[in-house]
Length: 290
Length: 331
Image (cartoon, rainbow over all chains, first blue to last red; front, side, top):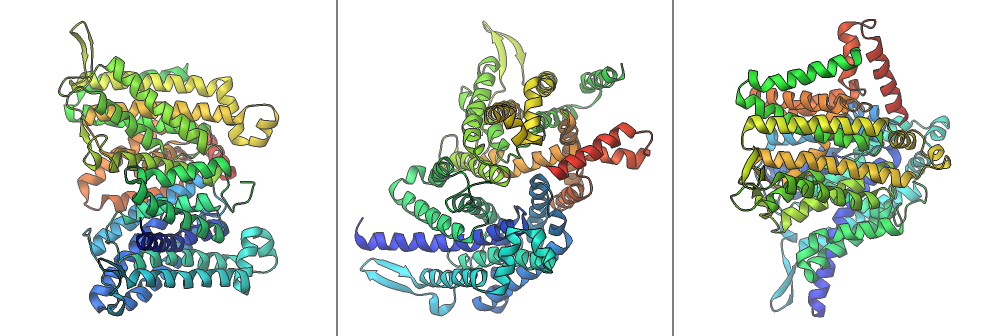
């Protein structure tokens, strides 16, 4: 493998890991702060991609699709939290698993009624739909570079909000000690609602940015859900920094696994997960006691 | 006296059933019984062990694949050879996954089992071990034959039904014995208060791993007969949607009893059959029903008894249900 090919694969790995991070950070935030395990997270990733396809097909604008898709996902998140999810706080995990499984069935069927079950593709914005010529027969799509840059900005924003703002302080306090935060006069129910909606919106955003470089298909949420879980297990649950580390590890393992060990590439990430479980059962950046 | 009466009556009904209904329903009930075995197997881990596993479909599907791979072309496989092999394969994989997953607790355990289950799914989906994503056929149903004499041929729906019924009763007997044994009490103790059970000297990790392995092997028993009945195995048999559906059955039937999940399986499979026949969007309705059950009846359908028949007539059932709810909340 020469240096240029290696560089291209490295970029692919980072780009893949960045999108994984978007989705998994939503999952880990919702678990860390609400204490709810949400199996329907992948369904919102799928829904985001379908919303992007739908809005882009009507308006012809990818940017409108992005803003509209995220906004719709956010509102759906607010409603779902209000109707279902808030009944799960403090309940055992089995109930949370099964309620979110019921949500998956409902969302899947709603998607089929609204958008059908066809496979679609979404065009990237025209000024990003170019490629950079690297060598005579090797080029790299600009859109993939744009994903990297965009995800970096979103990741920086998440870290800034959590570590530097008052909202982030409330969120961190809530993750640390829910009761105490409430006693101090923070309206934690409202915080919960917005955190859930943001988590859902992040999943949808992941689906939207990936839509132009992959296909939009009904089962895409399942694969992403499993990958997000592996990311969260690797990084440590509730830790956004852990999600970043886990997502990059998965991106590198999967991309280079496909290059070097194509026959076993699909199970390599699980081998990685098993190794981390043996080494640190609560994740690389997770707390010791879980 | 009454404790014995109900099971015997139910067993008599189950034995008489295939003589009273058309073949389609004999096969349908056999399918429901197979899912019942799977749900009861899962409940040993979930209800009795407090281990919410999302990879039991992988054990189920793996055993089905073992039958498909061991079946010699168009000739029937030997039940006495392939069934133990299928269950052993499921048990070994459950042992390995359990050994890793049991290093974690609670929500981690759920995610890790889900991920390892999907690993097996992708193993059969992406490689051509047995037909890849297309699946593989079990062309001839297994049989028991001695020196060329066919003693039992599962190709007959009637024979298949009774064999499944036999294994259903055997599973109930085995699980009841396990749950009532010192081992079962230790398992329940670890579920209710892990720290106390550990300080009393119980080897928690080992107890849970044994329970998880037995649970996986029994899931393999169900998967073997499912593959034999459909005559076909596909990667979807290992997928986590099936694991979650079986968890729904467990919750419907109630977590604290051995046979509750069997009731849950019969209820959910009956419900699916009715929904599929009446609407194209049956998954939407099923999803809403699942959400309703989770929110309104966390102790399972048993909670409905006092609502329908009044408190006094069913005092015992309602007490059990409320205690199950209370335990569910604490768990």
